[in-house]
Image 1 (cartoon, each protein chain N blue to C red):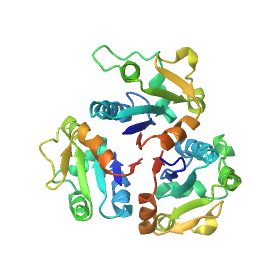
Image 2 (cartoon, helix red, strand yellow):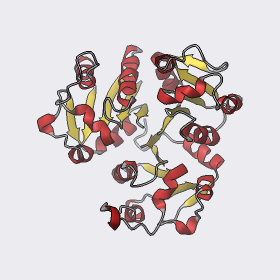
Image 3 (cartoon, rainbow over the protein chains, first blue to last red):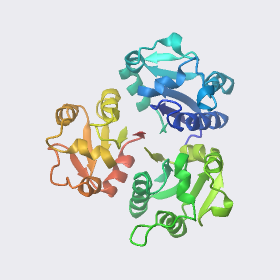
Image 4 (cartoon, rainbow over the protein chains, first blue to last red):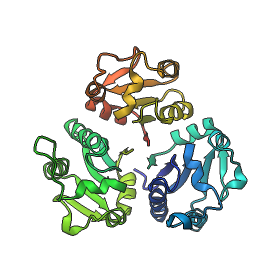
Length: 121
Length: 119
Length: 99
């Protein structure tokens, strides 16, 4: 068995309402350190995780969105956003805190199918 | 086959832990190996030895402990998630150990299949 | 790929997202509250029936029976027990839980 696998992290939940987005990001950073082929997929409300301009002072919670920008330093550069989910939320690529690749739903499904390990939180 | 299992929700509140346990038992019964169960998010609460369910209910924590004893399943609790939620060595149930997220990644690398149970 | 879904389709868009995104020919397993999707007469029936032309849909019977709907299994959905769940994870080269 190869020790280098294709890991995909599927993010479908909005930030702050629950802790999943933050704790998912923690796993991503660790996985990158294991020298695996890492990609992140943002579907449904997960797209909101990438919205720039978060101001979390008023809810006394740490704004963890700058971490998405740090992913590049960990060689995590494959960030995919589902086009239909993005458009359904009135967002476009300029709304995101980091550069992403926008994929159609069908392209996203195909990419998922090619993974060895898919983790969703 | 070698299985890894991830549990992301706490006991009793959500069915995830029950589903994961029954899946693990069925995998072992079919002759597979359950190499590791990794507890993350509120799933770390599965490892509290202070849990006291009513007597006529299943004991989810003890059930995991017994599975670990009977079938050498490695029960790993994420340290960062555990500390956030007050799970420490001092209240850790038997059969569980606290370790880092690397143990989850390792499950993904070493197991033939990694199956997640959560909300 | 095996797609595992655990939410009722009447309160969550998860199953619909899964069915819309997945590659044709995959397996879908309904567990926990997603088993309501596998019942005849639900508002989701037509959508699930349409999806069954593109993928194979399975339901975890212990979860359906626990919810009092063991006798309402929608035609075309394949009933499995936990051993069948394990077998599906083995026969597919990968799996994902739609959480």
